[in-house]
Image (cartoon, rainbow, N blue to C red; front, side, top):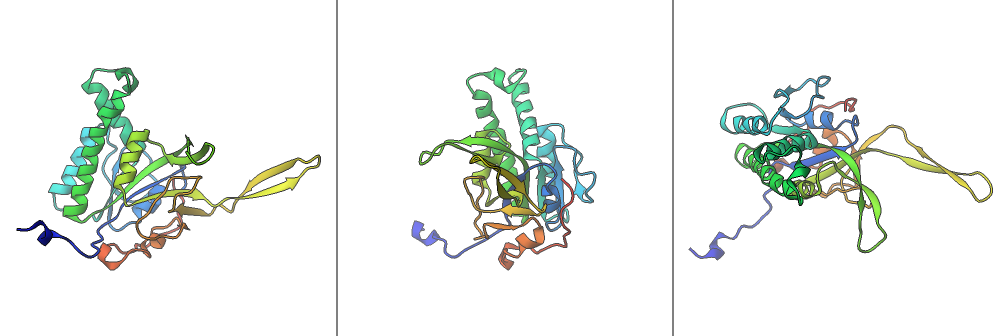
Length: 260
């Protein structure tokens, strides 16, 4: 058969693959657990205040992979898989790399090779999530904390921006795999006050409103493939308004995030 006969046409959207990152306590986990029929793979202990279905906190990469395998092989009602959090998952991956190579820390492996070895384990996790998405029709929501990095922009002076709290090679791999990378933050305004002698005092002001930033800006890493607005409220119901029926995802009832 000619290769031309296998050409595909038309949009074929599927369940979303997203990374939501931000500061601790802003509501990332609440957002994720308001997705349709979620099950959480825990890598840190922080969901006690949220009523949701979750695996026991994983203490090894093998336990994480076993949870992914169970969701793939066994019958269940879940439609969304959540990993909370990716930066604690990274610790489990590093522990696996160190155990395999009898090193005390990943830095002891030398020449940055430890992080290279870790990438294969990251690929194994993403392959497992891909199988759940493509063969079990599950939405994937990955949670991470944020950190500030110095970004060397070749077109401007270097500046600071928010990024997921992962090693740069892992962050690049996960961000590329995801359809959406969303930055959860508070809406903040600044107010400058003249204090005389050509001096100004700048204050940060805000109402505590939580938002998702969906488009990359100098202040943060973000992307989306849904033509989302630059900013939307941090609530699954608001995000779900931008999904089509073909995504097989519907909005779930949600309250304003108050946890994490």
